[in-house]
Length: 254
Length: 279
Image (cartoon, rainbow over all chains, first blue to last red; front, side, top):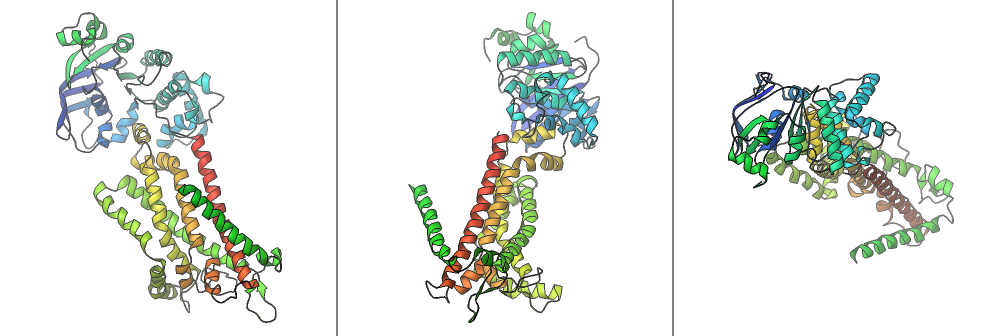
């Protein structure tokens, strides 16, 4: 890794769901303003890993962890770090588009209302800016009061990205954002992510190796909860260091 | 088959009420029936057939009951669905459902023996059999309906809503207030409407604690005589086929139409909302 700057760092990180250990001694540094892709077969722990970063696993009882997970050099699992504050800085987009049962406008404005921003003009301005950033504005500008469910799957996912962008997070985590979408909608989102990385660090879980290859700067290959290989995307796809990585990339298993 | 039977029974009840009740209007004008406050069918010289005081009694008890049970019920549902740990919930929920199983006579007795002296004492009244006491008793009867249905609606919301909200930096309370309650609002409304239907139709407990005075009530401390209580009290004294008998059926018809309208309107609201925001 040539990048020296680090935004998020896993140090000897282990994670358990009750008695089942799903992450083993993860050591990984994620640099700012780039796209980091997590790849690996189903059940290898990539979703668990990404959900540790904004502490979404707090919602599940009986989880346990060991080791450290640093964001801007602070351990996010320490008591005095507010989880609400953390999630304002680290946004998330989920596998299945999950807009709220509200209008398009209200969906994007949600994060602002959570932060108690009351000014109508400020909210309007931010909603417009976020929808533009998510390449959705032209498609919905005349229908902002329609239900978010009237949009197509790909539009809904971009709406979720706009919703996450509205609170100007440092990092956006995407957990297989395209797995429920068709190739055209997927291409739009990939294009969007490449554009967004200039201002926001992006970490994306994907089961689609070609997607990782197309959009990411760094790629991490996970297998059975262990980081097998983590380096520049070009390196990992063209000259993988480990036999296991090579086999996975060739499609021998996974 | 069963549903056709149910439908037939419903239509049968309606026609039975309608056929008997409508005959009353041959002698009582609609204006006198709905807009006069004096109900005195047994008077020797000039019987009066105005049900306005009865309707007012029903409305006061119903809305009084809802004012008590809706905030309490929704708050309990939110607590059970979102805040309470699973273990205590498994104990509390069946307990609440058991309230629904208490016979209304028993609740009426509790109202007479415990609640009405208490109400009389607190507000310094000569007796506590009035609209307030009946509202409290009916409110208690309606609570389990509102709590269990609202709780079911809240727990059946997709977990994606919770995740999406928390991932945007919402606190748990913000998640409940800004996402879950709006998303569950049509279901919660259905719960309230069902409770309303139950409150309108409640007879026994109300009859025991409402005081049953025929005078037009002016405050919650006045005794009232809701429509249900009137029918139950008077039907055993009337001659079958007399005008009084028919008038009581007309009152029953009005009750039936009120509950039917409440259900119909709530169905429409729910239908409209679910069509707009289907997930």
